[in-house]
Every structure is written in C-alpha cells, then in structure tokens.
Length: 81
Length: 173
Image (tube, rainbow over all chains, first blue to last red):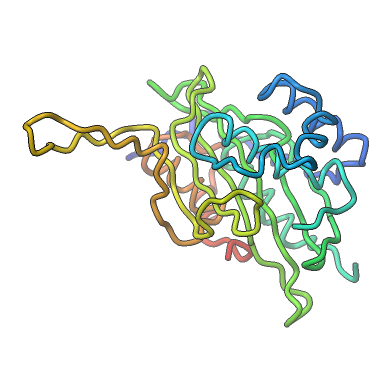
C-alpha cells in the first residue's frame, strides 16, 4: 500500500520515568476507565486472587491484562516483575 | 542499577514516533527476575488512519529485562499491542506475557476480532471466534507492529524516515 505522509513531523514522543505518584495515577485512571474501580481497589482484588482464574480471552480478561502491565508503575516491585 | 538503557529508550522513542507523539511512560522495577524496564503509551494513541481506521487508536505495553550475560543487554520479554477503532473496539491484539498470573499460553500470540465460519457436517456454518483464540506468532517487536500498521493498514507515518526507523529494532527480541 502506498504511503501518504501529508505532514511529516519530527516531534518524537517524550519518554519520561514516571514517579510512583504518577504511576499510581496512571493505574487509577485506567482501572476506572476499564473496570469502573479505583487503582487501589484493583490492586486489592489482584492481591486477593480475584483475577487468578481469568484468561485474557474476553473483555474483562483483556482489561485485567492491560492493568497487570501497569502494576509496576504503582509499586516498587512485584513478584513477577 | 548500573546502566539505564538510554540507547534502547531512544530507539523506542523513534519507533513510537512513527505512529504518535503520545508520551511514553517508563518505570524500572527491580523484581525477583532482576532489573526490568516497563514502557507504556500513557494513553491510547490516535494514529493517522484513513477510511475505517480514521481516528483509530493503538495501545502498547512493553517489558524489557536486563540480561545477566552480557549484563548490559536488554531484551523484550513481554508485551501487549492493540489496535482499536474510533469507538475503542479492539480489532487486533498481539500478546506475549509468559510470566503473567493468567492461565493463558506462554507463547507470543495474536487475537483477531473476527470469526471463521467453517462448514459443519449438518450443512450449517459453525463459528470460531478468533478474538478468543491464541494464534501463535514469534516475538513481535514494536517496530514490526508499526510496520504492519503502515504497510498493511495504510496508517500514515508521522516521520519521513519511517522506513529506516522501523527497519530494525535492536531491543525487540
């Protein structure tokens, strides 16, 4: 497929190390958008094993997988990280 | 950590810049498996799609792990990339999360939001929902995902040198 570059730009995205507070805000925003719960509530449910039997085959599983990738933004470390 | 992966981050920035100016957020967790780097699009990124992909968005999450041998090498160990239409409906999702807690395949795989309609013995048509199946792939670096969007889906690259930027991804695994 031919490529159109109508307005080429050279403003590559900034890369920034998130602070713990910014990371928690990122997780919180996505948890509210995807599951309608706070980031803290997601972490509580995750730690309690509420998502342990999920697969990522449906909408809920996809959302939890998305949030799982954000856990290290909200915590210093995790067992699987 | 003895060395931040500045060169790898710069390469990621150039690859992501083909698709979006969306900021990338990183963290450097020190887990049981050693030093890691996680990278996220800070929010779903609108790409320059056309026709049915106008206002389409992509999301990306990547996890890199520093190799013990040589200790300066970083390699991609987990990811999820997805393409969504303007309403946020998922169209494609590339996953690799071998250490996640979910009982799902550990190999890299693809979900396609479409269905096959194979003929059944009784003459009817069955339904195989490809969004629920795990179609195996090799490891897919972000550059390959971006190349697919540009080359196959007609997403307009933002950078004139997009082909060179996406020609290789040294940290893509």
